[in-house]
Length: 269
Ligand code: NAD
Image (cartoon, rainbow, N blue to C red; front, side):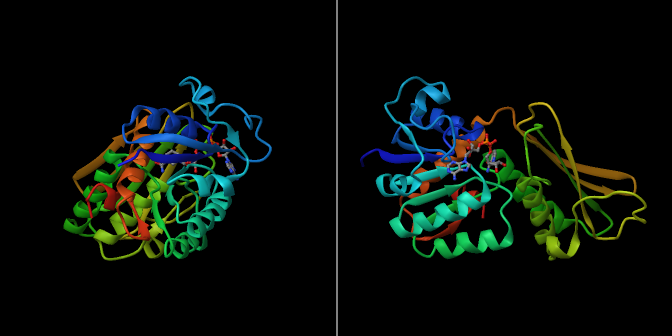
């Protein structure tokens, strides 16, 4: 099989750079295109140079429409509104779309679902293997324990993160809720402040920390009278997300149209 041509949207972002480096280190795929927002000062520059892996001969462009026509798969870690627009370019061109952007609303997610009727989309708030195992464990532990165990999700990220709680924390909350046969919409308490009253039985609480350069720490606590179970994951580098995203692109090559998650990619479903 010929090498898979991968395009990177958000090429000069923190994750875009990590993805470019990862593609260059992975066999079976090549960096075949890169795009950035129109007003980025990296337009016209070499994607490899910008990401610190040497000249690749791939110019960063602002025209994502052409990018989607020219590559087999696009990996995107950008912002929600651009991601949704791009999913429709993926649908029009049949290009595989790997979406790591977080902070998507339910309406945005419905748009991805609609686009996935015409192409293959993998969408995951966290692309690391470890976190996806944490999703599966959280669901399992939550299904075993009753509501005497209070569930709290704690996360910490670098100071540049703009959405809260993180997409991963929300995913962990959804996994915990699913294990208990409920939904996050019914049971989630996304933040607390002031006189909150006592904790509601069955609630799934969240706490958000921000600071420094932390790529992503997540912990799910199951706390009862006299004992506590804690499941946690610490990301040491952004490269783990990039590795998962490239793995997802290669996996998606042989899949039918549809909306998939990293649980599908890692066969954890
Ligand atoms: P960042 O701000 O460093 O990078 C985002 C890039 O997208 C920027 O360079 C920006 O210019 C570019 N961009 C914005 N609009 C664009 C457009 N219309 N076309 C092309 N490029 C555009 O942010 P980051 O730290 O790289 O994170 C990006 C997203 O990925 C966030 O939502 C973050 O939460 C998420 N993220 C997800 C995972 C995961 O595993 N799923 C891991 C880390 C980060």
